[in-house]
Amino acid sequence: SGASMERTLCTAFAFLSRPETQEDARNLQTSVRSEHESVDTAVDVLESVVGVRIFRPECSSHNQGVKILELPNGWRVACTSKVEALYLFNEMDAYFRHVSPVADGVIIDVGANIGMFLLAANAWLGRDAGGVPRRARTYLAIEPMGMNAACFTQNVAIHGAADGVELHRCGMTNEANARKGRMDFTYYPHMPGNSTAYPDEKISLQQSSMKREFLEGAEVFSCPVLTLTALLDQFHPGLEKIDLVKLDVEGAELEVLQGLSDKWWTIITQIVVEVHDVNNRVQTVEMLLRAKCFNTTVELHESGSNAWLVWGSR
Image (cartoon, rainbow, N blue to C red; front, side, top):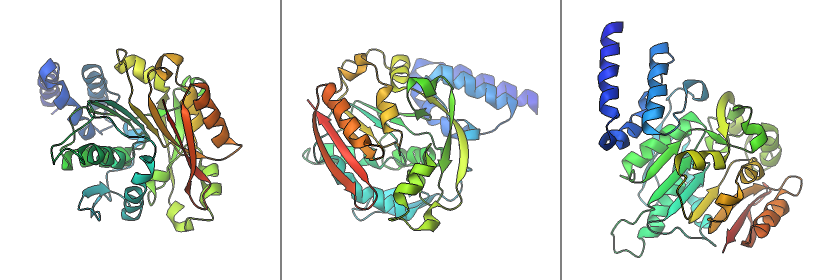
């Protein structure tokens, strides 16, 4: 009954308000998916208690079609597309060519997808540790698409990687777009990592290298957006150093970088960005990083797709 549900929610919120259980509250976020008015109210309360934006139902596909894939190195990962999960796994080494994660450091993963970069960073940190797990102290993962975020959460659980990990279910953009509060994102169920706020650009770039059926069945969701500066100011205002930023946002890379204030630029020591070279965007991103006093390296990432990787370090 309604009264019974209300009593249950009140009891739950009293428990979640305790500081020692706030971490557990984060793990409950993925189960809150109903659009019923009372549960929407519960979501608002959870956001204030946990301090993490909860991805709302209108931005998410139904949690169907999740598969478990065993990768060549023995990892088991939750995904909705085995083809794409294998591709993501195979491309991870490229990100670490000119940057490296730092044990007990801070990593920001914009466009976290299903969590492959998190798993790769943890593996990289543990490779010389004699089997002893080494992790980032703080790992901020940002992913707007509901199915990707659900798989990310499941993969964190599968690999026991929850310590220090925060998942923010929203999109990143610049100040002008952030003032709108929301943007439309196109979700590709067969290739969810290609989901984007700029579908025309995505189709133009991928039409020569990707089978047409991979982009079929697209759905459009309106999702909350903000700047990376706003997110950091709200949730981590006291950060003194950011050891690595990885950014893979399918066409919005320049906008996301423009959403960083000088306060945050000055404490970033390493960054790697996947860039679609449209309208000289690769050169623009590289010049921006150089203007922020980074040493830069640029390499072609995907043959035939005009996607590049730009690294910065200092």
